[in-house]
Image (cartoon, rainbow, N blue to C red; front, side, top):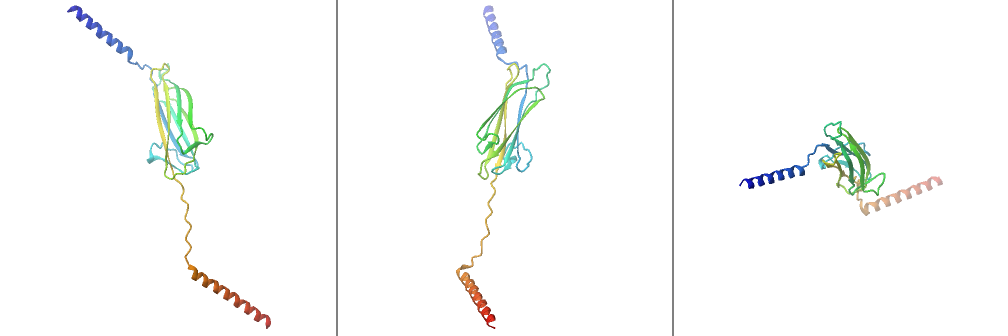
Length: 209
């Protein structure tokens, strides 16, 4: 029995040791955050987080909008670099209905942002043109980031969206002219001819006098 007890104890210790090795310690603690905002530059609109349709920014076809993407490290300060967020990459695949002003054919934005220290942030802005002509269309643009600690033991990632609402201006309907009918038009034409004839007769009479 004593020998069996020793074997069981050793087995449990081995399992615990294996568990401690497998579990990540996360000694390095960056904390990434992303915020995406949008504003309508054409009408000098206010910047909005615009996370859903209730806060969406109104646009019209042809408007130029500005997306502002802020990626920050809100981890606790650490002079030894423990909380630095390294290898940060920003990606943004543009949805249909908008296009980059600088390069209309480019549909994916990828930015290598390097290392962001605690308390610091990186801000990127992109101008896009609204090419959708569908009234009431909701266009959601999502930006994401990835990163990790300096020793690759605490991966970070996140996404945020900004929504715009396309409003197509209505073409004003011209006012309808009163329908006078052919009878009224004929009467007016006859009256005009009669008046012209009367004027001509009177002119001749005056010349003979």
